[in-house]
Length: 441
Ligand code: CMC
Picture 1: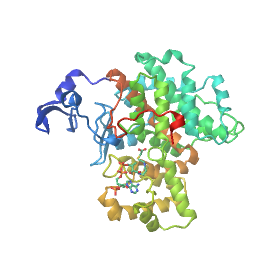
Picture 2 (picture 1 turned 60 degrees about the vertical axis):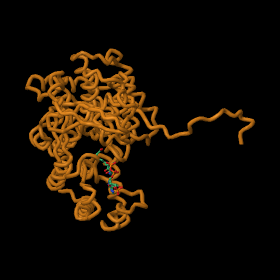
Picture 3 (picture 1 turned 120 degrees about the horizontal axis):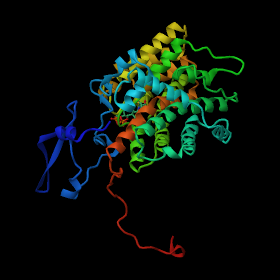
């Protein structure tokens, strides 16, 4: 899907924004999105004034016009292609939402079957790729393996490395990636545990097949519990996209150089790895474990999170955009409660999480800064309940986020966006004279 020129024209308002500086006044165009957000167009600012804007962290920078995902952080609203995430989580499955995000519409029965069939067909890795796993040490972080293996997979599909993929080739490339990330993830887990590789079972649907590759043994088939399968579907689904977040922006930046889909997604995996982004789901559980082990009180943790001298942050809390409840956190919290009840799990970490949440939501520091639980606060507890090991949590996020990354790659190229190349305010030394090494102090 591309945003039509007529829609961009429609978004351009008749009013102008006026900027004045040192007796000079200029008018700037203003755009209004379909959800009434306003943006000042500064693309001509430097040409007209010699000035640039300064916005480290891009908190006020609109980097794209996009029709994939809408987030209203003040109201806690998240929509994929116009559908509320709560409605999709209730009625849909990850594969269907992946199609929606990639192609802009919910699939009809035929489209869904064809898409699912392609996902099945592409599950296996080229047999030579299996040897690559032996090149990693046993304790290699699965996120490192995933990004490396995505680039390695690209080597086996030279026909898909073009950025001018037609509809058929984009369908092939995106289903290959979406299918194979799951296989790579499961293989990296098995490899690091010394378990034999389990090949995909084509009778199983997307999530069930992943669980099979993770947990079956050659002598014992893993029985997929529908409660676990549903929970995994919801986990992947709520992560499917989140507009211009750090990893999607990374994918867009990389693809703006006209890099191929595989390497752009691999770059997204690397960006996601960090503890302030996708890595937070692992950090939340580590934080809860340390509270449990060291018998710390919720109050002590909240005090530490507020202490500006300490680098500690309450992991799973706060968000650049959400200044209200993250709707994904609400969905996952509900799933956690359901899964723990149905599977009759009792986990002290869940009790700790709930008491931390309760305290934080009543604390002036968190209220003032509008810090609420984000998607990562409950997601790890859900993964833990369905048997996913801690070092795989961020990989699980990556599998879920693949549709979003690929849709952003396609959108940027469809819009023929210029290469991303921000400017800076240089604050360094103005000029130095070269001194030969013998004369330097
Ligand atoms: N614990 C304690 N204080 C916090 C926290 C937190 N989790 N988050 C923000 N603050 C404070 C921060 O210290 C600052 O205080 P002050 O105004 O006194 O300097 C204020 O709130 C604003 O924070 P910020 O760092 O300017 O906000 P940001 O938009 O740059 O960062 C964030 C957003 C998500 C990185 C941050 O809230 C954070 O580090 N949270 C913990 C890590 C986490 O849970 N990350 C997952 C994010 S959601 C999913 C994803 O993106 O993958």
